[in-house]
Amino acid sequence: MSPSMGQLVLLGLSVALFAIGGAISLARLWSQAPALRLAAKACDYAALTAAAGVIVWHSLARHHWQPMYDNFDSLIWLAILLALFVMYVQRVKPIRGLDWFVMPIVIALLVAAGIFGKHDLHVYQPVRDTWIWLHRVSAYGGAVAFAIAAPVGAMYVIASRHLRSKSPGPSFASLERLERLMMSSVTLGFALLTVGLLTGVVRMVADKTSVSTAKLLLASLAWLVYAIVMHAPINPRFRGRRAAMLSVFGFVLVFGTLVAVQFMPGGNG
Image 1 (tube, helix red, strand yellow):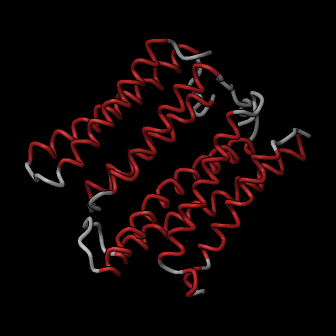
Image 2 (spheres, rainbow, N blue to C red):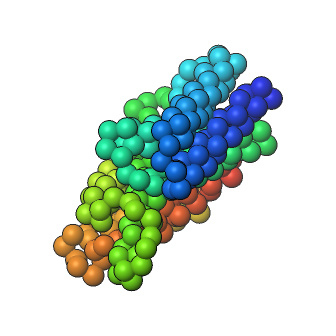
């Protein structure tokens, strides 16, 4: 069933809180007042609670607790997992500026959930066997991993450019740490995307279901791009900035795949 107006309002509140938290975090460039740090954290935690509340409310309304049951639910789950990652990293071993790059993706996913949930809700195929679960978890898990690698790659490119030009710029983590986090995310995402592609083909052959050409093409191109990034350590030509730029481009293809799924006939998860 489509999300109710109350659920959409709560989702909008989550978006607003994430945006306010991001603005406060950005303001900390000019002021390191403890009050700003606490306010940014409070907004992020409140936004995360509101997003989780939408999922609980939506599950109660449809009388079904299966996660990633429809595109509204799935996009919110992606946003929550990304936000949790940022909040965990910033609590354990902070990377200055990480939230400025990742939170816009979180907000975009929540906005997309509201738009598609209200105007083009798709209920995915029911989970009948392990293959469907494996395909769905690996596909969305890979998207989360790549959504981490892309902004970290963008941070690497910006920091590297300022370092080369010796001009003042934003102070992120060291290039080594950014590259390590990017490659770890790409490695996890590549493994999950490979499983997602293989299980998708198995489902297509076994169930004789049609697969969107755009979805298959974009996912295959993303796999090839990340395969190149994966081999960066043994190919100096694709290390550093080039690998970072490819990780950003790869996420554009992954995001395009997610969008393509939303326009497919209902039942294709």
